[in-house]
Image (cartoon, rainbow, N blue to C red; front, side, top):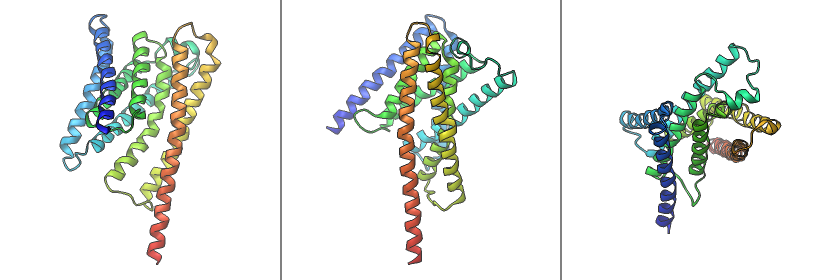
Length: 278
């Protein structure tokens, strides 16, 4: 039963990944969309990073450790890219930066390339998780999440619309840095809840969860609803609203999971303190 379920999941998500790749190759080679080569470049960059981490950290060849390390690299790279793009725009004058036409029909300098590169990462990560079976359940949320992002990002890149909106959603990668740091830290065996570094990590985890993930996604959703009448008829608005609804639901689930993890570590710390006193 378990093997059958796993094979069914793998077959479905692998098929969608192959269809995605075929669609991308068609756009690049038949429609001559050479700018989309940056998506392929992203795939190769993160797959190469995976191989290098596996080579240099030979004592940590656990696929989950390697996958999380590459995810940390993506969060660092994407966060830096988004901050650079937004800072550059703010320096050039923020007037009209968040107008509907600017967010939907235009693309800030380097925004298309940053989104393409990140899209390549999600394709790589989907493949890596399928290859090493780094998921659980009939409907793995992580695979569904990656599939939804691939669809939204790729359609936006094909039609060259809502690029800036999607760049704004990637601000959440700033919070993902600390999620991945925590995961890598625990897999490396560092679990002292009394450590100053661990406490600082938790502080930054919570701050960025609210400032870089929850608040931006709520504001983007509000902006979409406010400007709904400005969208032309088509799939852009429904797809954007569904995508943001999914992101906000995932944020609620993530917040609950973080709170549970925080309480577990606090409980473990108090238990160890009580044990030493005895």
